[in-house]
Image 1 (cartoon, helix red, strand yellow):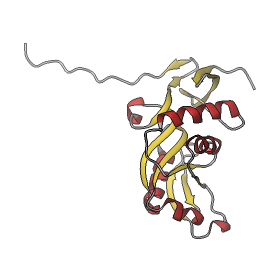
Image 2 (cartoon, helix red, strand yellow):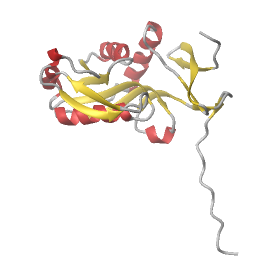
Image 3 (cartoon, rainbow, N blue to C red):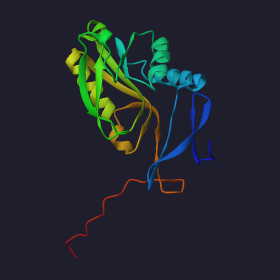
Length: 202
């Protein structure tokens, strides 16, 4: 891989340098990829388990695929069952529930599916929605819609990191926040402040 600018994060004593990738000519993001990183995944699960210890929950829920290792380790830490919402329907999923959302990656509609076997596990239960990074909230919205269809109560939403406009994700239980970066420089995008109106009084 070519040399890239990075953004350093530290979770439960584990340090990683996240590569910055361009999503447009003037915008770059720090990419968190837990797949294949056992130490970081375990650390993230430990950290989230501590923050979620006060939440009364029955089941943990995520959407495939990068968050699967995270929810597996988190379920072990919290001693709770877990459910993965799928992004493609398979015949063995039976009478699956579905919800459509817009994928930020492709810009196209994306459908999430809840396997028929998991209906009973979720109906009437208290659930926590889990993701690795919450940026636009599109996947999160799809998960919420499916939980409503399944008759589950969402009691908390959690992620390793939030990203983008920090104030938008104040309700998310997270271990940190990933800033956005502009252009070719490793420069954080700062939220624009509203201009103060001049007083009409003299």
